[in-house]
Each structure stands twice: as structure tokens, then as C-alpha cells.
Length: 113
Image: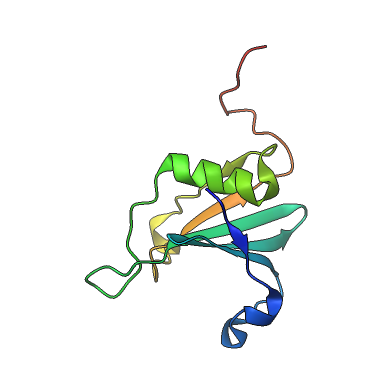
């Protein structure tokens, strides 16, 4: 998937977040990279098409998320999605969040050399 970098001058000023480092676009997806501190980055990924409920469509595959993570510069790092406790759920948009971590997770599968 070829993602094009969006120049800072074209970022929406009304949604300025100082932690946002980069934005990328593809005809199907928008990707934003945020610095969450301590070497952790958050990728937000959403489809650009709207569904019938005026929310972004759902349906981003695991393969697409893996390809996106790699394409924006994190091919050598593990990333996780978090499914929070029920009382902490915030669901205001069909948007996926990948948390890119400094160190490899001990619970992840690895290719044996």
C-alpha cells in the first residue's frame, strides 16, 4: 500500500494535536502518527468512505494494518491494539489505534531462525 505523506500545511487546523507527528493518505485510508511519549507511538487508521450511519466505514483487515504499520516506518517494531475495560471504552469513530512499542513483546509469535 503506497501511502502519501500529507504536508503539515495541509493538516486541519481545527484538530491540532501537538503530539501528531505525521499524516498519510491513500485513496482508501487516512493514517496519523502520534508521539505518546516514552518511545511509544500511536497510529490511528480509518477508512475514508462513510457508512450509512455517517461514520467512517469499518472493515480494515489485519493484513492492511500490518502493511500500514510497516509502510509508515515501523516494520521492525511490534504494535498492539487495546481492548479496554468496559467502563473505559470510547467509541466515537470507526478508527483503529495501533500502539507501536519500543521493545518486542514477549508474548508475540516469532519466526524461528
